[in-house]
Image (tube, rainbow, N blue to C red; front, side):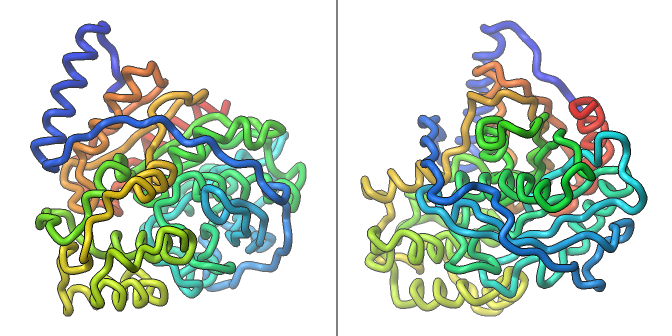
Length: 391
């Protein structure tokens, strides 16, 4: 693990060099944009709406049988209220004095259909192991499914303000259910799609849940600068060495099609693009990956016209621009050099921008670790970070 230090001049030079590397690797110029303001909720955020027992087969090792699947109020998109489901796992045994500290977990890509919700299907092997290690260390887990996955509507994939709110609001809902079994102290963490959500959750946590004591965030293998990349999608989009890029584009298009009808996203799509977007709405991640493996398609083949229009750019900036300043708690960032799904230069650029804004950030760079296993490979450092910020 390394901490960022250095003089202002050294910081500027380092930042320029990192951005240059990012441009060379991705072929895209990355620039910062102002973060969008969050709207007020129509309904109280984090209101507990329903709860039921966790299916025994999906109960992680070390979780109490009083753990629950809950439904709660939150944001559906950055501008619209909705509901989400999620799981709350308590460690076995009696809680410590003051209650179990809470880790809000934002999962990686599972798909956007209701059947893909981790509270319904269980977590992936890697994420389950991750949750079990937190439970063994004495932390309660509040794991959102995200609005639209198990609840009404299509998930607004890569809508950071909404996913961040989902990860914050489940903590408030969990406190309504478990009361003084939970500590007011909490952190948020997430992998990939969930790492993107983690940045947004960290940015809004203190103001969104002032009655709780937010202490920090851990973003693992998180995509950033999507607001600069996604508008470039179109019939001339080049082939890029990013595994499953069409997969992620399709889920984002599906969320825009259902949640932002005023954009008429279909006018930009080929018949193939429309058919695959509809398939993405009803297909979980592993199955969509397998379908695209046997029926390969390029990003360019999805589009008749580029997405680079003023209306779309405005929405994508609101959804996808990861904040680089304004964080009031420390952030831990983890990424692997051998991650083929989220290129590490995007994280280097994000770190450079946060560092220049004096964000309290620490960084762990992994090697010889794939995208998903970055979660468990970084666990010792993440546990140390949690122990420091939650004490």
